[in-house]
Amino acid sequence: MQKVRIINLFIKSRTAIIANEELLARIRVIHKESDGRYGAPKIFAILKQEGYTGSIDRVQRIMKKAGIRSNITKKYRPTSSQKPVEERENLLAQDFTTETINEKWVADITYIHTLRDGWCYLASVLDLHTKKIVGYKFGRKMTVDLILDALDNAVQAQKPAPGLIVHTDLGSQYTSVDAQEQLKKYEMIPSFSRKGCPYDNACIESFHATLKKEEVYRTRYDCFETARVALFKYIEGWYNRKRIHGSIGYLTPDAYEKMCRAAA
View (cartoon, rainbow, N blue to C red):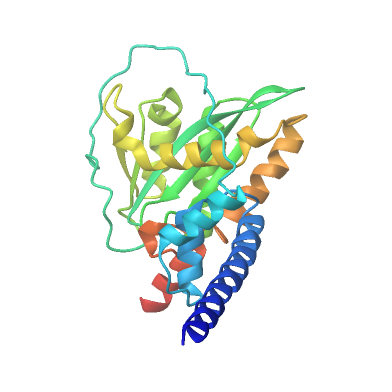
C-alpha cells in the first residue's frame, strides 16, 4: 500500500513538472514575441485566452525562477522651457470615459533622441475609446506643422463625425491660431489641460511613457531616419496591432476598433 502511495506521488510530481515545463515553454514564446516587453500580467492574460486555468501566481513563480521579466527601462525626459501660458477651457476635466470610437481624442508631443540629428519630436493622437494611436507625425523640429500633420493623419484614417473633442496641453503648438483653425475646419471641439497638471492629459502621457520604456530607451538611434522607421514599426506593427490592453479586455487597439465598428 505504501509502495502504491509513493508511486502515485511520484507520478503526480512528475506530471506537475512536465506541466510547468510546457507552461514555461509557452511563456518563453509569448515573451519573445513581445520582444521582451511583456511581464507576468500580460503573459497571464494571453495564456487565459488560450485556455490556461491556473493562477497568475504560478506564472509569476515560473517566470521568476527562469529569470524572465519585462525588459523595459525608465529614463529622464527633457522638459520644455517654462513660459507664461493662458488658461483655456478644460472640457475633458479628467473624464476619460467614452461610449464609442472617435468621441474623444488626446494629443501631445514627446522627445526622441538620435546620435547624429540630436533631439527629434513625435506628435501623437490617441482615441480614448480604443487606446489606438490614430495619427502621428515624427519630425526634426517641434513646430505647429508637426501637430497639424498628426491631426490630419488621424482625420484621414478615422473620418470622424463633427463634435469630436480633441484634448491637449497648453503648449504653444496646440494653442496656436493655425491649430485652432484646423479644429474648426474639422468641426472638432478643443479642450486644454490646466497649467502644470499632467494628469489632465494622463492617457497620452501614459502612451508616450510606454513607448519610451518599451522601445526608445532600449536602443540608440543613429539618426532621424533610423528612429522614424523604428517608431513606425512600434506604433503600427506592435502597439496598435499586437499589444494587448487590460482596459479594453486584453484586446489590441486595432482589434477593439474593428469590433466597435462591426457592432455599430
